[in-house]
Length: 198
Ligand SMILES: Cc1cc2nc3c(=O)[nH]c(=O)nc-3n(C[C@H](O)[C@H](O)[C@H](O)COP(=O)(O)O)c2cc1C
Picture 1 (cartoon, rainbow, N blue to C red):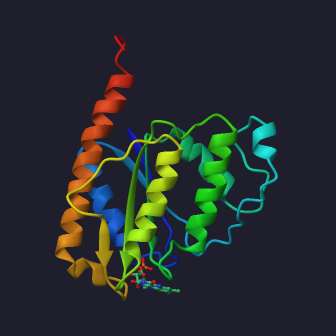
Picture 2: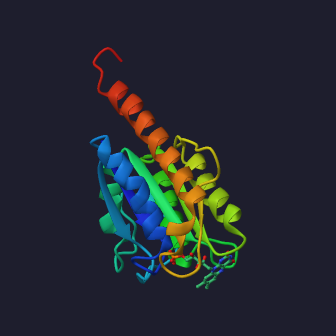
């Protein structure tokens, strides 16, 4: 079982990274392999809307001068995907949006490779607007036929400066519940897929 996480913050070790690592640490306890990829701060182009991906069944984007094509095989091989973003003017970061648009369009036009993977969203924020980011990323997962575990509250972490989120005890607890539910679902679904009776 494998989970790949994307940190949409340009801060490599900021609040979003802390939140993602908090979830990944719990997944690791269940022997789930994890990897975090730094998305924020990369120079990423948005979708060109050229339709090349629909005409060429190679699970690659025509834009080849940024790292998104390197990440696609990792996404394809993963059972679960976590996307984390800070809240920027009540929205996700530009890099997170580029990732979503490029990978989502490719999956839909190509072989629906996101279908039935497990998705989870984590969002950092200072004061307001985070629920919009949370809903937007979850909308991306859902329209690509992914399966989403919940938590006991929305998985948002409050903080401004890097590290502040470590003081948001309730936010961290919400992430722990998400991680437990994600691990439970992964073991159920991946285990069932590997069951020869199925
Ligand atoms: C350009 C920019 C816009 C921001 N907009 C918002 C916002 O709309 N709402 C909010 O609560 N925080 C906003 N913030 C604060 C960040 O969401 C917050 O500091 C977050 O913890 C950063 O996470 P990071 O350390 O992972 O980068 C903004 C920060 C920046 C740099």
